[in-house]
Amino acid sequence: MKTLMVFDFDHTVVDANSDTWVVRCLPGQTLPDSVKNTYRKGHWTEFMGRVMNYIGGQEVSPDRVQSVMETIPFTDGMTDLLTFISENKRTIDCIVISDSNTMFIEWILRAAGLQEAVDQVFTNPAKFNGLGYMEVQCYHSHDCNQCPINLCKKKVLELYLSEQSDRGVEYERIFYVGDGGNDLCPTFCLRGNDVVMPRKGYTLEKLLAKVEGQEDNSTSFRARVLAWSSGTDILQELKASLQL
Image (tube, rainbow, N blue to C red; front, side, top):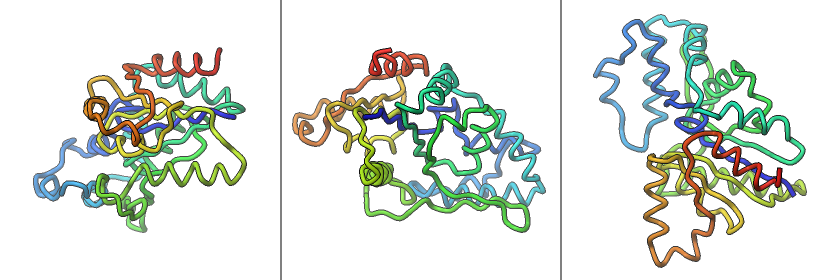
């Protein structure tokens, strides 16, 4: 019986939003209103496609984009936490479910030497086209009306757990670590032995407080809630769970 660590990425593993950090690769480090104003709620990935198309149109090279993304700061204590996970792969599996994209996350983890900690990344596929522009696609389609159109994290987590079970892998405990509104949905598939860890002061913590305050949530929401401020807080809880 292993432990599963599930991480969001932006404002969780890294202490910023990778999709807005990329704007720093532009000469003026800002987007024109003609691009900013095209965002529609729930359609962030489509918006990021337009952002990356604009960045490519400004003749910003793929190498420049990568070098800027590799400067994004990790959240305090998170590198120590991921290093611990990478050193204990016999007992800990680790996945990332994120609304960022494959290239950003791979670049950032690899530059920090932390890619070995993460077994799988579930996020929007990205690649550079023949013009050197990054193209970002939606991760999947789903029928959940609580989540952005491109990604339901609950659907991803449920499918992962099902596939692991088919391989004979069961988890004694799952830790779900996140910060945002789109991290609420997957917490409803966690069990009583599992732990959802919202970042203190962020949206997920506030949403969970509302859920816990509802009298009719007892059958649908079962996990223990434990807020965190740094990766050190999470590492301490993980070690206690593993009795280390």
